[in-house]
Length: 262
Image (cartoon, rainbow, N blue to C red; front, side, top):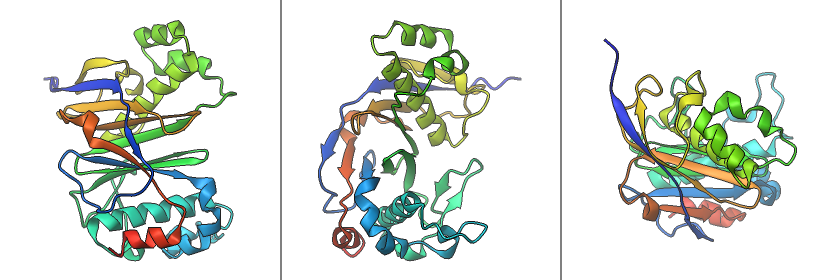
């Protein structure tokens, strides 16, 4: 017998409250979603200080070449540890990640804390919540031939919506990030069903053949900066719109250290 289990999926565009500074207290209400924005070029001078939070496996490639040139990884990996340590009151330098089947990271020691990370060009976004979630950000490239992919990754009604849009490129990235955020939240990765995951505004039904979930989900796009498109997917919350906040990570080691010393 076929598995007929279904889940609801609500999709919208969301104006998220942006805050200039990190929170004074690192606490998550049941429905809260905190997104941290990192503009990587602001952290080049902090690479050496941040590298202190990484272990030997993170600092070395398999061929033992030090990640001297890959400052982006050093920055966002160490800041991810600092953020998670702030919520869990743990030692960032001793933090170890476990991974689900499709490489979605988690902390076995604190299963109540869900997090996800995405990076594109100069920006990184990190989302944390008590609910399962996924996040994606994409740089809206001026040279990327997106029209060649439309029919391969979207269903007919979505293809039509993109072609009829006043800003086809923005619509393409809006739809793409929604799909990406959901599969990252589900932990399935991009597979043969990726094309059939709904991504247009409104309420949809996801059957088990598309995604193995019985939990309702909410997806929304958000703006992080000009020329970037972001999307957040989270297990459903009726108060979703008021529970999502974006913080800007400061490029100041004293402030970063203070996050885990409070």
